[in-house]
Image 1 (cartoon, one colour):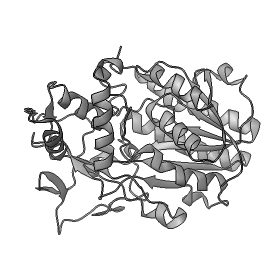
Image 2: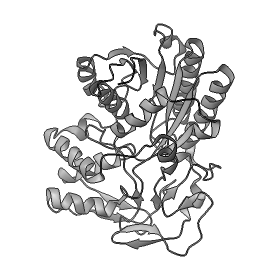
Image 3: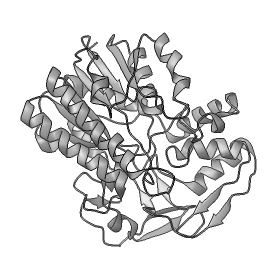
Image 4: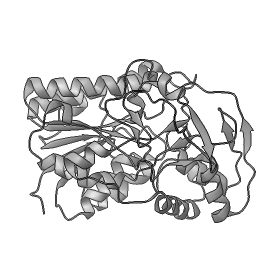
Length: 361
């Protein structure tokens, strides 16, 4: 197995950070794990004891505060999983645009300064939402089998095919405030890496999902939908035709680990190859209507409402093409969407109050 490294995971008690920490601890790599979290997200406290039992040293700190990083020891690599992950953050009337920028951009700057000081590598978990919204929102689609798909014969924007959105797709504004903070973080990370000579990788992730994901519609639609359906909470198909045909791909965070291990140990790559899409792709893609059909088979019938009024930043078909990651790193996702849903369902049954535990304060 790979030699021992000291890894710092930011946002360690969030869903993605904790899932990666568990995967690393259980992989046999024997990496020393250090976690940083500010514990402001509802539900994050539930991961503290489990991570400590795996041998992770947890530090209560906030990446927005540079002084919180001063007592951290040098590390070989930072895996940055700390972020406000909602595309509606800063514009929904419930959250602050300034705090979004402080979390997702100023925090990145502080971590890059930390890497500069200690000559640490930096691995940024980014998002599919860095891609330009207008050409994606206006994509010509048709509903087939309860799900939108690109219409055969229609013209596609550059960087998009029936296999999904490629890394060459436009990142021109608007991409949402959330997407803009992640895109700016990507650019700064690459600049810091080039200027101060430390390795940087950017993994643009599709929709991440799995057991223990916080049950919020803006951050974990699969977990939110399953938990709400199981509890017979009100659910609605919002936007487009109001029938739930909008499609997203799905990826379990632990499936990132083989890619991350290769990046931690991999040779230097060209700047253009430091950014890759990481997603389940078309094989994992599912519409909300298809998700409801899965829930009906698993939990029994439940009526889902309809509201065709559009929401900001909605996209009918958002699937990432990870062919570049496959070519460069021989990476493929391992966990099917059905397996992910079964895992979430098991967790939902075992935690009947999960929506309350992870609800916004």
